[in-house]
Image 1 (cartoon, each protein chain N blue to C red):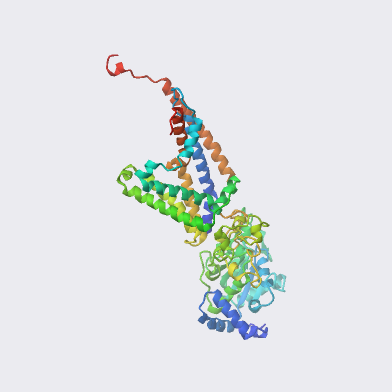
Image 2: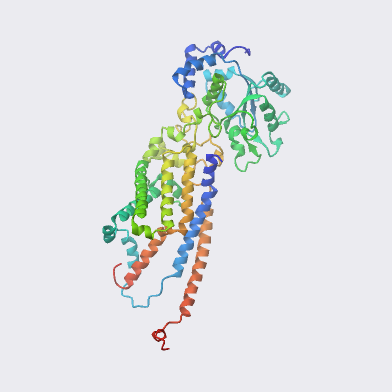
Length: 363
Length: 219
């Protein structure tokens, strides 16, 4: 595909009708919480958007994010946008290998210096650079080198955004997120394990439309996609309010689709677009499939106290606290009580009763 | 520190510390009191101690008519607060889950909207008690800093719980974290303040009842 054709042209070549394209623009505009009057602007911007060069780096990851984004469904407008961006380097997807692959990355960097988008999935090990290398280059060096000429960085998936599974206790590789290393570039975190595909394309669409990065929350996530609470948007919320819960995965409550809070659902602490945008072209999403939310778009979700423990249960087993409290409290309490008791007995023993005669001075 | 870091901290190590101090303190004080024992009564017993003492523990749950007539406001508000607080503590389902995980016992909970209403009434009662203490000249004279402080701490646990439940403060991890932190404050100060009456009230009632029983009178 030529680097000079526009997105609109590319979409038409792939057989996307004008109507289909506008539908996508409308959906994108509404996803980004833009007023309907902006749909035209979005369409115009996307229509004439030049093909951005994208370098995709995969570090300590499982390729689940790539799977999610590329294989989620049959070609859609979102899929075509992915086809359309100039994905100049991606380990899993590119045909080239060995030196040719690395050359492609360097070439793209030089040709689009200062303008390319850097997409990163996976965390970066700091404990030992040898834990994860690509063509003999450590992840840390490759990230620093590639970030230098990037216009912006998109950290895809919870590993790149927050450290993810590799960072879970005890973090043997010393894994960190992209934002822990790169401080001088705009970074958009698109966490999730994996992220919702349309969120990814939405972020790209925003960048193509406005040439800027969207408004971000405290975790560097685009507010338009990560501004809503799963629990607030959950279709099972009414059951939570009515006090109707599934207690096991095969009881009456589970069959009737009641709230999964007691089975460890992390919906209340999770901010993501799953409840509204759903997965697999809007077919379903984890809670609809009968499993509680794992909170995968939140930092350190692996260490948040167990996937099947209700949110109100403390992270650690209270047995140690109870044990120490009981033993120490009982021991010191008994000792202190015994001392006070002895003092009382001694005082009674040694007491010198005052006689009336003494008071009257006759003794 | 991000809101999630804060929540992890208060759900993790801080909760463990608070729970340890709470259990340690409560047992420490209970053992001290029980071992110290009462002064030996040398009079001839006219009745049993145990049954009379046990009965008094339960009998005094009933409002005292004289007290009700003499000072109706704090008595009624006090009952509303205590009842409401225990409903929120023991019948809100996330709380039941917590108790179940720690002690292995469970019971049916109440629908959230009921707990919600009860929480509001309970908070209202607490505000009423605070204002009464502040405006009644006699009670004000008798009150120490601790009396006001405890009302505020207990109010905070209810208020932060209410805020977390309704997502009034966003993001939710911050709201839930604040609720847990206020509960941890309550747990830590509990054994060393008048809150200890939660347990000692039963000892006190028993001793009162037992003494009266021994003398053959009703307590």
